[in-house]
View 1 (cartoon, one colour):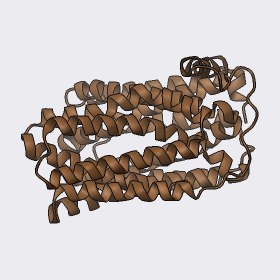
View 2: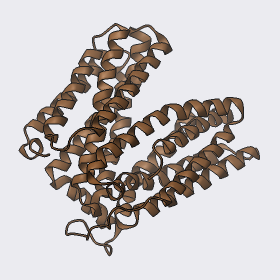
View 3: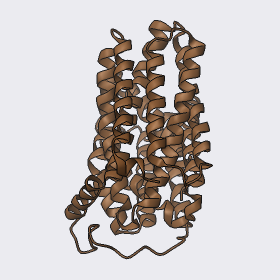
View 4: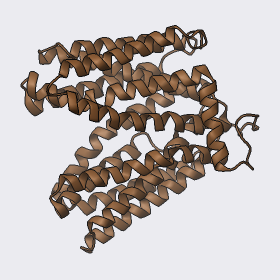
Length: 391
């Protein structure tokens, strides 16, 4: 496994570097948006393929190969930048290549965990990964910004390349706890084409009501997280809480702090809890928080609500992923996780666009609408006996 947060820290460096060097070259926010889209679109399109490959090949080798490719890419971008040869089209290509390679790393990263830790250690292990990634996702861009300000944007690419080299080194030292289980019917065989294996994964998710429910829940939470907690926070800070950037920073900090505490609590949760009832309660928890944010006008109260919501999101992320890793057969786990990821990749930009349209003129409708989605999701869970009784 990669060290918790090392990958996120490296991504933080490249995020700052991509943004700063694009704006330096073009002075255009549109160009920056295209660069970010070049990274996001291949990731979304290829993640299902990445999940299929992680089930067919060694997840550890796939992670190593992906990390080494990104190391070479970032080193190449840094070298080209230092030589003053870097142009916008090169940035487009580098961003697209980065997103494509990341699509193969992420499903493998999540699916390899059950093979390297004992089953009773899944929650603590996921909690450690979640906390490390969240801390690094905050510190990475901050340190990257300092590096860019003190030296050169290209130095951030070089540091990013070093981070990916370390990830490859750590992954190479990971040892499997057990051998992979024999392939069973419904998951596909090693001789199947990648297309048929992807279809088998989609069918597997759709036909199992428990897994289908988990994917729907994760997608709903992502949809209600992406827009309201980015566009919505900015709108609240500027137009209602009147604290400007300070208010926005406090809201973002409260969300991160709550998610860290929630992840730690998720790591200590006992396995015998009724997962369906627990997830239903968490969606209701988040829905109540969204309703509160739609009417609160006090910064202290808003920060408190966001802190509690972050706690629920962090808890759900650890406990939900641990349940998937424990209950899905190893030979199809990567594909199930990739379906979950792709659903989130689709939900997030849709949420950003819709919330962007509503945030300033109708913030109450934005928060009330996302609250309704969460409440309906929680109620639907309670109406499904296979989901309610799953443990």
